[in-house]
Length: 185
Image (cartoon, rainbow, N blue to C red; front, side):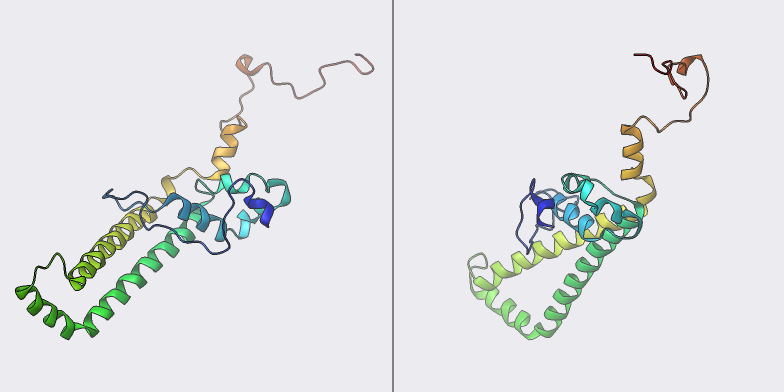
């Protein structure tokens, strides 16, 4: 629903950077992309977050991992996209091997930094590095899914319900019965 995006208005069609910051070598994907994918991949037991009661908060919830199943789905989507893009680049380069040989011949005769073909090759190499690093980062993330803190654990902590309850003097302020006499003020 459109109201879901009041706090973070966005266009119906989204584009994201592959990496979070230019020049960073770790391959971490754009956080906005991950947030958007978590929302897109909500389903199953996580679908309750789409209920109208959470309408104003759901976008914020997507800023952090929701559940292991949701995060695995997001990681798989990014991995699949990176692998597909890299394969398409490889296929294109194989079909253009003649052009590469011709380019190498031109490079011997021209200043390589100024030719459009050499500039395109630099951009293509940068894209390949970004995709490869993102792929490696996401594969590491997939191996560490069980180490992440998900929505349910965060919510229990927020409510103070993340530890076992022990009936002792330390918790004597927790009352399970009535604390006032009926009819009393």
